[in-house]
Image 1 (cartoon, rainbow, N blue to C red):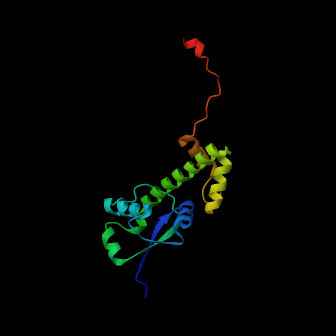
Image 2: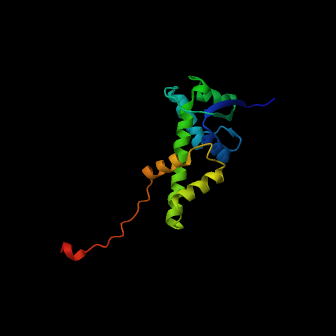
Image 3: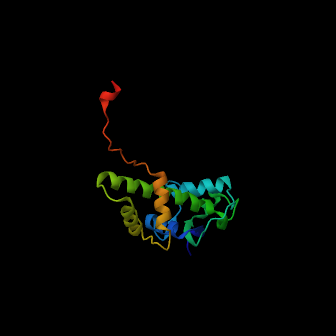
Length: 157
């Protein structure tokens, strides 16, 4: 008999593959990593399913009975779509940071770097639309293109 209680959280396909890449097929709950802290904050604040988020799959979380009491049961696990939203934001920030670093260090194309990173995580075009993810990157990217126009300092003197 297993001492763990397994709970399923609804997630989208790319979030599930990112979690499997980061934590494995099943996540053993810990209060010391970002996913554990995210789960605690969602359940302590009692976020309910207020908006429609496309959740195609589920991800398994193993908890001890005392950890389940710590989190509380003010809401159902099937309503915890804000965990999906939080992990998706972290996934995008990490992906965009990686793209920025590859552009700065190795001067690579951003779209090619993004596709390479996604395939490394096992995420394909069927899981998330690459074009919409790239448009989101272009809106939020921190690596700005420099203007190569020469400045005439004599004009300002």
